[in-house]
Length: 477
Image (cartoon, rainbow, N blue to C red; front, top):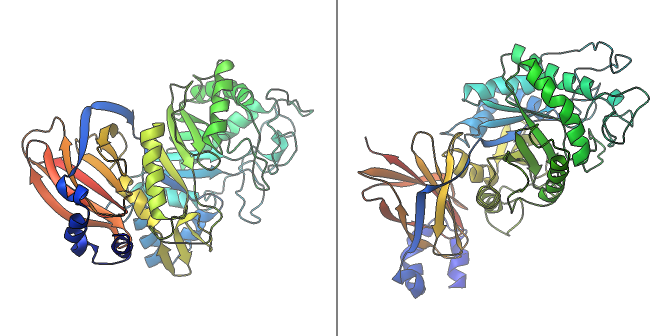
């Protein structure tokens, strides 16, 4: 049995062996695994799935040959040719040069004091992010999240936008130059206004990124109490500006530190001054819900940063493989009640493994991580609601969502070394419905399998070994 199942993970004709596998394991052959979807159990609303092209990665796409450029955009944002992503996370620059891959600030020179009138400088390009945002809009993307890694150097205790340092004026961090909290709030608001002038509505704004870490690139330190101190200035400024934008806090490197920050923010009475709790998955992944917050939860950055490039789905069980990312996305929504899941980089040059698409001159290589995202983001759109779903087998992981238009998407991840027949029951469905199923594994990239018309809310299917299948159900009119 073990020999045959290992062969299945690499064979392109794996489906021909299903019958033999079922007979080889009597427990599988005797009864189907039952998956039950309960539409009356309704959890968090979905905001979407996305990527970032910060730190001059956007301009890498912009400079591609036209045919390759279109291919990359399709792979990221198209519902029929790619992942159908719906969120773009842009970086708000803080550096007064473009050395390395730094992002330019809109305020390269200090106005002299925190109360002086700033002289903003806008090039209309923003390291290619304006162009990319406009391209994303043509695919229907409406959620644009602008996040700052740091305030400009002269607003900080270390007089540098890199290497940590604190925003002048937050708790326990006075500066001889004054309290720069209001100036930083105005700075972020002006950035949003520049995008509005370019025809791009920024829907979400953040002011920190991994605030527990000192980095050689743009970085700024903060604990929860210090974040609250800034929010007490920032939230009123946003409200007064008239901008329809939601504040995000605080982009910790992992779930554990973000929980600590939340507790400290609540202790300061500032938990109602922002709308979205954001954390990354690096240090501690999203495995439990946050407490102490009524706010929406986003996972806003995560990638495999240290391994060499791999495009594999499931070969060695590495962190960068697509199968691993399918599990991570599903766990974030089911176990941590996240409403959005954003990968670090969508496409870039280089031999690292932090991107979904590797750019190679005029050619590209697509990783299976992209197709793991597609299993969710193609079929689960903003305003969808996660609904109850459970399986009778522990090695068959399930999630389910009902879209605003009534279409139901059920993701089934088979971690077993054998193919499994499944019987699905969806409560509350009446009349005739049609289900389309889509498969991703070593041999398939979100491939259409079949379609079935069913009544009474039940149908039978199968999930190949070490694979993900999305069942997409719609009403027959």
